[in-house]
Image 1 (cartoon, chains in turn yellow, green):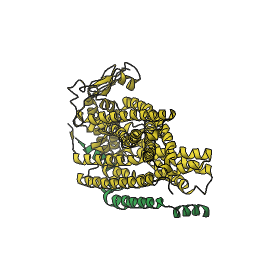
Image 2 (image 1 turned 90 degrees about the vertical axis):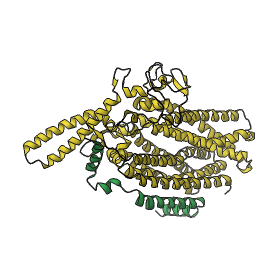
Image 3 (image 1 turned 180 degrees about the vertical axis):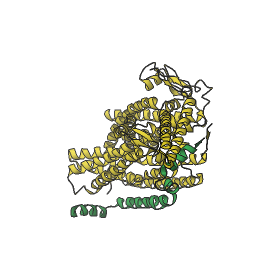
Image 4 (image 1 turned 45 degrees about the vertical axis):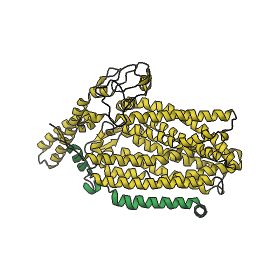
Length: 530
Length: 68
């Protein structure tokens, strides 16, 4: 008989809230760095190719805004690593070097590439050749993008752990293939989707700032605003279309490796073949729906066969719902996905085997005869075999009730729709602007369009953050998919300590954000003035 | 070396907005490393398990959260 020891649930909630807060604030700075970095590099490329001083001035202006955002964002991600060491120590030890290696590479690349080339970009205008300066600007952007790659590799491993083997002696997962970790298909999809969505934010930002100059009828910035608006819209449209394509590929991968997340995103309680894709439905944003008894979410309007195509790339493909995943089901290829209860039982077997194995190791050290040592060695092998056979479901051993395996459906459902809805809006918005530009319409006289451009800035951030909410809420209760739930990952700490630092962070990050917005607005108001 | 030094020296000297940004970066790093890290974010395993005993500590934590 097994009994689960409980860890203070409030501590888990605070630790999760603190991590979410830090990651969300950190993500306010990162996408603009990636998106604006691309656009300022394009501006400077125009200067390199034409030699026109206008493009140099324009590139310098956007680089100034890039610098403000860059400075505010620097080191905000480091706090996440502090949190791993303090709040998530079991997790940190358990993941071993798999998580540490990409983060270390990220740190080194970020430091050397970005610090070197940022300096050339800002200090080198009169001191290095145009070609070298242009290369430095592109490399600053590339350095930031490569940093994002490694962070996303680490995150993807948590969602789809590959290239590793658990060592019960060290209690760590050890990397068996660096390439499997670094080039995980989940990581590639996540990187492509995340980076292209960051370019959308860059496009929206440049269009909005340009629109503000036109709205204010600032003659000194008029030409820059018109030309920047065009480049911002082109980058934005390409990025938004790419984000849609890569998002579709990400959803396909989620269906394969995290089917519960997809079921939560879709509020799909009971799956089957020929599944339709929910466009809208009423899912109470504040309450977990009664998925066991409801056939589907009320007032549902859906696209026929849409989800089957999204998840399986076939018109009639089988997509499991929440209840199928809990009760178990047979896949189209005939393989069986066991019920949650069986996984929980096998997880407990694995944990008990691990405990026995380590106890036997301790006894082996104290054994005084060869015969006893041989007996213990034989028992160790038996326990190891049980552990390996059931390790796939190790994390399920900590689950008390199968309801814990269902993420909070409302957040997943609505965040997914906000992300997709706003993403579609951006495609239409950028396409409309470029259409007007192509028709030689005077955008500067369309006050409503200029105002809309500015209003879209916060919506772009909401869209981007919603994507992260789907990714991270959808994988609950896991810190490492199927391997370790949050309840086992968290340190045995008191909730008050975590709550204190939560409020400290909230104050610190809000202050930083206020300072950034303040400086950014001042610089935008200054415009091209020296 | 001298050219590299001059490059950075002149660059920093001629900064305008950059000075404010560097000041903010400095204050932020000081808060992060000298206040938050030192006083609020100890290495939990180092404090509770001691060097070399981390595996035993984590094993105990992970196996006792499911107790026989």
